[in-house]
Image (cartoon, rainbow, N blue to C red):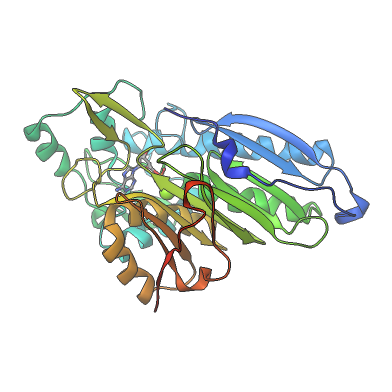
Length: 335
Ligand code: AMP
Ligand code: MG
């Protein structure tokens, strides 16, 4: 059910003046990684962008839950109890989001995600008894980290799929900046990471997809920020006329059905935005609004199943409804 999320990249780079080192033209690279199509555009030399592609592949080979050689696979199968320093740091970040969202994000959800077939493509609806049993293996608070060694109780398994693309955006952005790039747009399968501004110094305009009509929901203007969307429409299967999607409510083991069609999280830290996009989708509008009021570092756009758009206060004057929603006024969530 993956789709090229090209629409999310609407209003791409217009011709501009010089970016870094006098670069006036961008290089492009497409890569299939983390089970999705990624599109990179950077005002840089081809060789720098090729380095970004290699970086993405190396992150994937560390974090993949299905690649038998990955650190996560070895951890989950009990072959290893230590991971690289980078992976340990990411796991710590992920676990802190799990804790702060009261388990709406739970990176130990993998036994359940696997039973639904979302990582393998062998889709099925697990029975209630099976889900109950598997949920006994889901509890982020039981994962311990000492330095780079991870304590994972027997049978439990970690899935960083909810945060990996946002983290990758952060890593690629840092790599590009280290290599003198001041203008780039990364579309990591719908996780957008804007590096710097457009070459002419203006903000990147990022479009958010409308899960209802397939058009656009709206746009936001950003510099140096991630724009990360989670929605049931991104990956799902149908059985007996019912849709089952890939974001699971850890309290039930069922696809999260909290009255939201999509959540877009915008902020400087891509990993945080990615983890939160998944968690807020599970929490629903009211829970998300409460969470936003007590936490900093991000803004969000919500589309409810009733078709209404809500934005957090920081997006007032920035979010522009588009497409079928162009004449609507988004409701604002105030602090
Ligand atoms: P995202 O597309 O960022 O919302 O992440 C969805 C992916 O994260 C799924 O494909 C699963 O691999 C995993 N996942 C699903 N539900 C959860 C959850 N509640 N907490 C953590 N990871 C999840
Ligand atoms: Mg996510």
